[in-house]
Length: 179
Image (cartoon, rainbow, N blue to C red):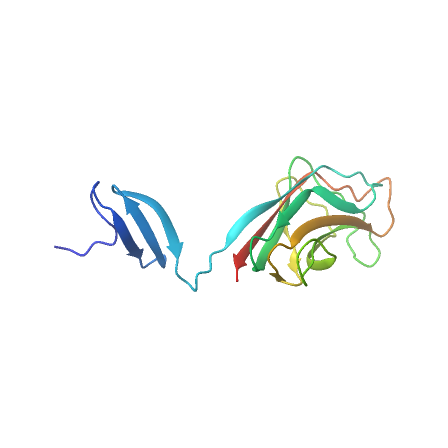
């Protein structure tokens, strides 16, 4: 009989090692019920940090109330990104030295539990971006301890102007691995 790469039959129950995907799969009555990654126990998880309403060009900087994530265990921040939901961001110019633009930061207490002011990722929105376009954050400090709260803040760099630096309603998501 030929060697098969997946379990066969509706009565199959048990485990199967899926070598191409490097994971252990769990089957019950021929149906895949779950899988475990085997690469040092690490799996990348993606979570929505939250959503934020649009901020007018003369809106002040603040911690965004609906964006928070509590680290379930010690974790390594792999990546973070932001996507405009319904409109475009607008900036005034493109040079970071003279322009007016929005900066978003992800902050956490990297020394212990609770919230803090350590920047773990940042995003300088120095150019206008259309709706449904993603922008990636630059990771500054990737390790976040268990029970630390990751928050998102924003501020205007340069002058608050009536004609620029609008921040569109957006979604922020992060990818992390438990360590």
